[in-house]
Image (cartoon, rainbow over all chains, first blue to last red; front, side):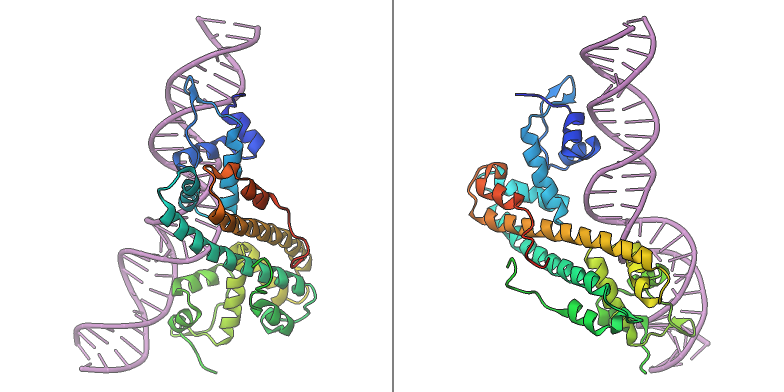
Length: 138
Length: 138
DNA sequence: GCTTGACTTCAAGTGCACTTTAACTCGTAG
DNA sequence: CTACGAGTTAAAGTGCACTTGAAGTCAAGC
């Protein structure tokens, strides 16, 4: 199996070597074996990295992402804590999607808006206040 | 028209007085008139505040939010810059929604997943990789 | 043997969105 | 008159997710 240096992994994964070291210190990436002090990764690391990026980009903190990952890499232990996190995060992600959806609608309607102050735009207020369209991706 | 102190505005709007002063320094909130050095707001401030919060919570930075607000409060001037920002932000919001959607799907499928490592879970990988369901809110 | 380039560690720095602190001013109540 | 609570400022501090800098290690090429 091919061994990769931190530079190669960084280049291919599209992030910096320092970020990889940071993830390792933070407990998100397992410490790989060394060849004369230098890290040697296998290609399995890319799956882990995209999992980490997916979580971080969706708004998980480093600590939550660690817990999220440990909810799977270990067999039984932190199930309760992980489950609690997942439920809470699911709510947060729902809220995030709702805000993003409203902001999108806002940006789109703002192209039509000719009001002097956006706070007074009827069309905008309708867009900004609309509650979740619960049918979509719910 | 009723005049409100910074404390009353903060309490009613659900944020801190220091945040309001910070928004003012950052050019998001207009500097209100003073009664013996103390800020006196009218109720119109609440509309502005919810606009600010909506933008910030959807991922706008302070600078972008300022530009966003100025795109409306002024009649003609920064239309081009604002329009460019809006288009770029619309893309970012789309990306954010896509990530949030995938994270949501991920959290939901993870409740079913019994794989030792999530990176190897077939069901999960299908969920994480699925591209935008372009029909929804597009 | 010396240089080069990619790696190593540890500590300190960065940018954002605020918050906290210290020292101060007011208007009001006792 | 004093004390109190709520407001004021400028400057420093906070937490997060990294990045940068300094000083060193190591294998390969000249």
